Image (cartoon, rainbow, N blue to C red):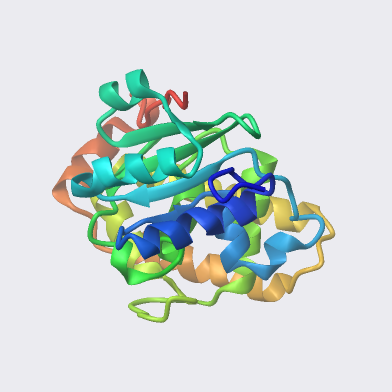
Length: 250
């Protein structure tokens, strides 16, 4: 196999891209399913194990040209129209495996948005576990696959406010984002309810007591955190006005 030919296994391919980015001194991190697989052993076991359609990364604006050159050198084609039109996204196509590679640039911006620029250096090869978790919790129409990804992360990682351990979910960080954005709070709390319902309704090989305890800890921190004026004003309108975006994914 050519060194520039993308691997058929998305997990192996994600690792290849990160390694080549590291060699070039680029700040590139994994996000999405392959990142969750890397962080959570439970995600590699049934019933949580699943296939991955694409490979997803996070990068910084000032390295956009170098990241594009990296992907072209690794056998990808750039979606030039998409890349020109989108401020916080880059998209590449793997013609060998007919698969996409997406980059989030500086800011996660799908159903909800928050900055990642200052978070990228906190872990390697993935973004921090809190941002991985939020990337799933922020999905308004959360699927069973997304719920299983969330359960896998919660099952394998303790929840603690203010922790700087990269394998511990910092509930203070998540609560802080939710306390300044009512829409994000609404979606995240909905998703946490869905996760609890899934665990209660399915016989899954996890420590349910630990999962429920961590869900309660995270939810409690979110609920107890002081809310911003912006949050309180938006809460008056509530669900009478749409509180999320419907992202265009392609």
